[in-house]
Image (cartoon, rainbow, N blue to C red; front, side, top):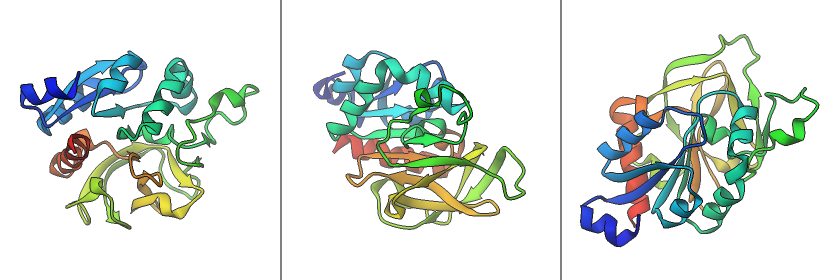
Amino acid sequence: MQTDARRASGAAASVVVVDYGLGNLRSVTRGLERAGAEVEITDDPDAFGEADGVVLPGVGAFREGVENADPIREHLLAVAESDTPLFGICLGMQMLLSGSEEGEDDAEGAASAGLDLIPGTNLRFDQGQKVPHMGWNELSVERDHPLVEGVSGEYAYFVHSYYAVPDDERAVVATTDYGLEFPAIIADDSGTVFGTQFHPEKSGETGLTILRNFVGLCGE
């Protein structure tokens, strides 16, 4: 999908949703289309480079996610280096970090390395919280980022057992509370690699606002 073709179609931006065998691709696609994007679901690295933005969705275990994505790992890193917006959702956001407690006891734990685009790790809730964390939680915006325009104090839908702990607290864009305060949205220093722990495609008008913000960023 070339930018010229996107403009001819009337879409605000062309977005690739990465198909690596995990994630509710259709729901994410429908959300992005409602937000004004032209969407392609693919695992073709050539499409990553042609798109205005790339979405890495995901539902499931961290180890399975990084193993499934391993064949396209270098291509995802190339997207980040190109300053094309790269948006991780739920497990996709956790994969942006360096690693996870999930699967740490595996003898082949090194294979579970994340993309390390936002240094840090993912920890399991262990302070008496019911796991998985499932439901609606309030978003508290901690710093400016194009993704969070108009969403501070709004609610989003979460389903997860692990939460992100970036090495640098400046990576935290928004937080929420579930017996402890944890990042709901993170971003790298460039601002073009970011992720939401919650599912914007399942978060009603709040999620649609976030997806529109993403599409707007891609279309710039």
